[in-house]
Length: 570
Image (tube, rainbow, N blue to C red; front, side):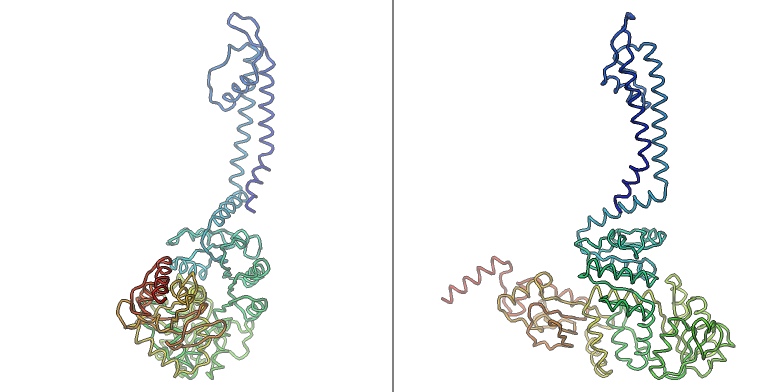
């Protein structure tokens, strides 16, 4: 594909180049065959090939340089006149063809593809391919850019690609308008690049996401692939051939809403660990139990209704097109009219979900419902990120934005992959256990959302601890919780999980001895993460925490100190 620009140029310029070569050849032939005259008017030999080429070159390019080897004869002047018009016309033909070629959409696409391929080949850091630059993809690209992670973006809509240039990003993102369903698009985006770390398919077309997942698993099966899906059938299909993560925004939100009803402690823990660090800690939602109204019975409405019914909640559905959505026992209407809400029992209801695919209708539903019953628990679906100010102004109890849900899920998976596995293990625990963990976290974060980070006991990510373990020194988990700058004080963080092989240890004890290859998940204050970093990477800091003594820091000095200790012992 990158070679198509050169191919187009050679194909389209074939006739102009041949014409130009023939014109030059004819002009040179005439100048080398026609005899000239000297100053006395006597005939002289024709021009040499070099002099003829020199003369035709500056004449054909309209430079008009006047130096010649000798005065022309009338025959040479006649031929020179013919040469001027012949070659100028040939050049105009060639230049016109080039200008027309550059304006052709196919040529412009080929040039952009070639430039894009060069930028991708020059990447020297690990990067992810993001297929789909809609609202979800844009949010994820912005978040990854803030994290300092490199990305390559493709989208079938050229306008979305152009909008990336208007975003306030720290780094330029290589982006191209291309169809993610085509294998060559992913290959051009760097699928076979040795630095490619994975593919994230976020288009609004399930078949395109499915095709991207299949392409990755066939061409680079070792790469992780994450996909967005709109239906359970598509998600099951993706999972059947090894797609690592599939997120269905509607199902995910419905699950969390049901969790808030039945397990408020677990839901609050989830919100704390997946929130934006530094923001105020979210308060419990505590949605009431009783009669609920769901407006809209599309994919979102069906997911919410199913989860609420599983939670034992009585549901009344309002749907404008019941024949299209398969709603057999619903009240026909949009829910924006007071009469429809009254028919649905708005006076006795405790909650309402405005879940249509139109933001203005959703706002109209909750505004009308609030007038009829001010005590309702309100859930509003926000489809477009641009309408965020309107939803913020209304301030529903929950505002559900599909793009934000998917973007947060994938950001969490990319930055702290252990967090998803930890949250999965907490589902089996009760609310009492979650409440106890919430209390431990609240004690160290000072009313702000905690920062969550993982630690990999490896040579690359945890050099000091890895060297200590390799040398036979015991390192406990509690040693990583001590603040080297404050004596025996403990860091403001909580160890959430230790993963050893495939065996997770939830809320591990500080006395656990660490091993090479262990993976740890922490949450706590940002300053705790910064204070812990030197212990992980600096041998002197780690030795001070373990023994209370200063130690040589470099590899050579550690070897020399060990050698001296052996001699003294001897």
